[in-house]
Length: 206
Image 1 (cartoon, rainbow, N blue to C red):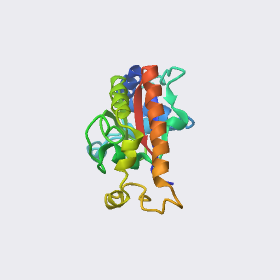
Image 2: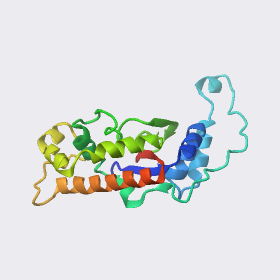
Image 3: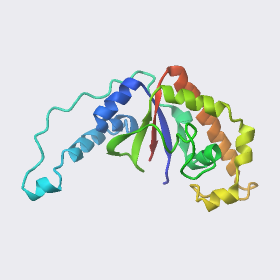
Image 4: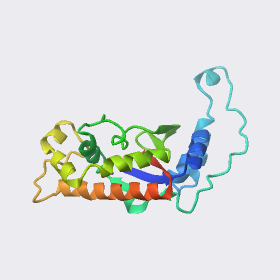
């Protein structure tokens, strides 16, 4: 168990659909669970408190909109899109902060636009349109791995409670910096891949 950050490649057309019909985000977050979208729709149609107090039930439901028509290369980025539990440590290396930081390098935790009304784990999913990964990839390319390694500060990371709070372990027994840098390499790969496809990003923490 834990908090895992995932990245998926999505077109701007798909992003528009997600904002118009938020339950469809489950098609990307949980593609093997076809009931997730139906459950989210049912929850969205539940009457509010005032409606229940005055005896009004849910409004009759219309036929649901069609599912997302994804391109063959949209969706899961595979290993490159799975930052597992390294996401908070990477954010610290990129911004020097626990939760803040300047865009575009703060993108793992902020920026883009939320898919409103749908919790996919720890908060809603966020989407960044196709122009945004380009600026992120450019900013990240300007920061070398050597610079990122120099920013690794186990004492400060533990003080800031950077998840999963493993950074002060003996590097001879648990190379936490190496773990972060491997994940940074995957992140660089994911961004290059998304930019090459001309897509945006879906960011989730589940």
